[in-house]
Amino acid sequence: METTINGAKAYYQVFGSGKPFLILHGWGSNSDRWVPIAEQISKKGFKVIVPDLPGFGKSDALLMPWNTNNYINWLELFIKDLNLSDFYLLGHSFGGALSSKIAVKHVQDVKKLFLVSAACVRKKTATKSFSAVIAKIIKLFYFLPYYGLFRKAVYKFIIRKSDYVYVEGIMKQTYLNVVAEDLSFHLPFIKVPTVIIWGSKDEFTPIDEAYFINKQIKNSKLIVVPEAGHDINRKQPEVLAEKVLENA
Image (cartoon, rainbow, N blue to C red; front, side, top):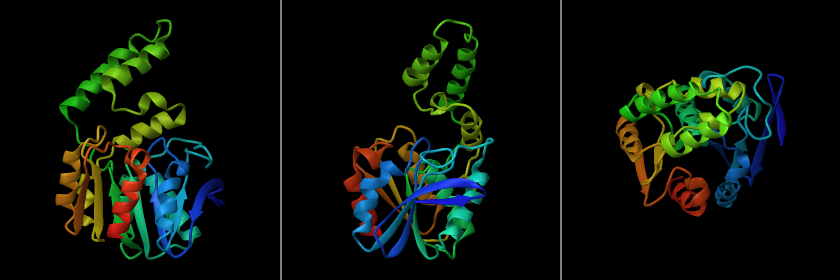
């Protein structure tokens, strides 16, 4: 399905009927990757809505770099356009960061919040500092033949935990804007019932962040899925859907 938000096409998928359940995908993802989970949740009396966030999937590309607040503004218009209220909200990774902000701003509209490997914590660490130094060194070799392949190899095998190398154009600055914002400070302001679902082997958002988020959100429950990684939605969709439905 399609709608228009601020003159731009917004694509989204709808599954089932009943209580509204909004799912926000992570960085570099799209609604198609959430179809198996959305279908399972929809069978239990939910109308599941999964949009392609601007710049991803079949929604229109961005015309200028965005930051987190730009995405929040877009989501508020999307929610209003679909007339959503008293809805369940699930966000994965980057979508989890957006969901946490929506839950604070629209506490009366969000019935329950699910944070799945949510990228809310952006604090500087020794590992991140090392990665930043490596990234700067790589740029010094821009003149070499096959520089692009060399750069991707370094990110894949040395830095490993960055999507930056895989984005192009405007989305590069958008990515930098997004990862520059640490949302830790507003977690205690989340007042809606919250379920935190995390893989014990998450390589992008470490399990320590799950415990931190759980501690910061007073009315929250943490569920750790053994041996699951960051892409739990793709590797273990049945398990994730089961955990969501058990706590909806």
